[in-house]
Length: 150
Length: 103
Image (cartoon, rainbow over all chains, first blue to last red; front, side, top):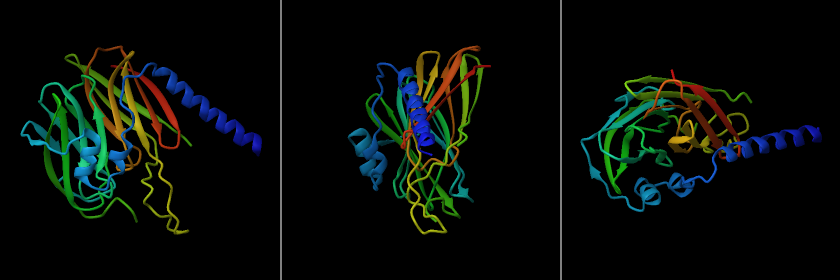
């Protein structure tokens, strides 16, 4: 039994090391733990970017359902025509921890699509960081069955 | 635990559209086990890195708010035949990596 566990843990460790080694001299930022654990949307933005001030922007489009039947799986697509996008973040103010995901774009096109959980009806805020400042737009998603807790 | 990652990457007019499906429970740490009433420990992917060849094209930070068996799609400048590699690390030290050719 012990041998099995040892084998498993050493295997897991070697996988971690293997992944670590494919990312040599990484220039990326560390995991922004505080931002993801902050229970307040403005606080989470502050943890992530050092400011919670953003300009409302018409150049960001959120594609999300107006009514989500299942809060556990809400498809959200964010696209933006803003130049030199550094990151796109998705914030749901009604969730226990509003910061859902943050994508560092590394020169990729201003587009991300993913599926998120929503505990209740709330605004989905898409925050785009470009040229050192924050731009954002929001859309309300009505949730009929929550996807957090239970 | 089966940890499968599905990658589809298609190039059109110099832009690669990548669609990635990962296999992960994505537990927030807030959910309770219905039988025991105990909290299920948080278990979620916290970092995903996408590389085209050696170049990082996208880096995602996630928390438990991303749905179970996460899906993500993104676009980057690339070419057919290039390798797209998706690697992730979760909050419990688990990880996976998979590559696919851009079609």
